[in-house]
Length: 345
Image (cartoon, rainbow, N blue to C red; front, top):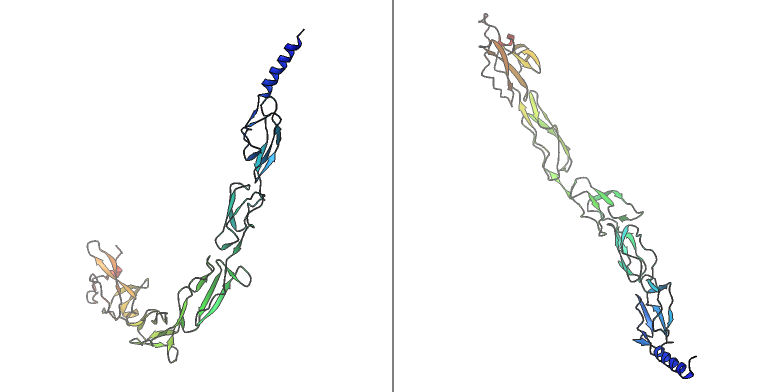
């Protein structure tokens, strides 16, 4: 049996040991605060955890009392960032982000041809709301296109009713007698303006000159303007070298200057030649010669091989050069055969 004195002594010593134990500074929980926060606590003192602004508590206790053991209970409290409303789609644009939660920001950009209507960046705030209203991408609109002097609007292609947006086009025509300098089509740019307007200038051409041995017809006006036409022709036995119809160009010059080229008399009295793929005789078929640009082929002899070959001669403005290999057959030398009658080489 324990004596009353010994029991009193043991009780006193236990009281002293227990009374001397205090709780240390409480463990840190990410994104939380502790009230009150001290380096030590007496048994029975109470602390309260709360999440910092922008964070919310998930699971775990928030209030703790320092026990006689001096050890804080295990704390499973977690503070999670507040989440802002979804903002991951921007029509006609793009959203750049890592997460829709405090304190992250998201950035906005618009596609080419659209402008950002609102802020280009918003931040998720402590209350779970965005710092600014979310923007939208609006189409870039160009004002009605100006019409150049002396021009008409031929075509206006618009993707938006009663207005023009990015990449829409306008096409112009110049009035008669006026030539266009620059592109006839302008385009609505991503900056909300049009590309450079063309210019319409009055253009005159000099009266065309009549070619030698020919004629030219053109409108009987006091002046000839852009796109006016002239028709050329030649007298008999002459050939037009160039187009029959010419046009007044935008730089005040005609598209061509045709001339009349003379035909050729063939300086051979008698011969068989190739003309337009057929064997013909000069004395019967080509007594009037050939026209400028036409070609005839003369037969020449290869004496060693006793065969024949052809060489061409072309009429060029009244001049024709007979191949040197050609020898005109004499009717007196009846015992000699014409080269055209020989087998081809």
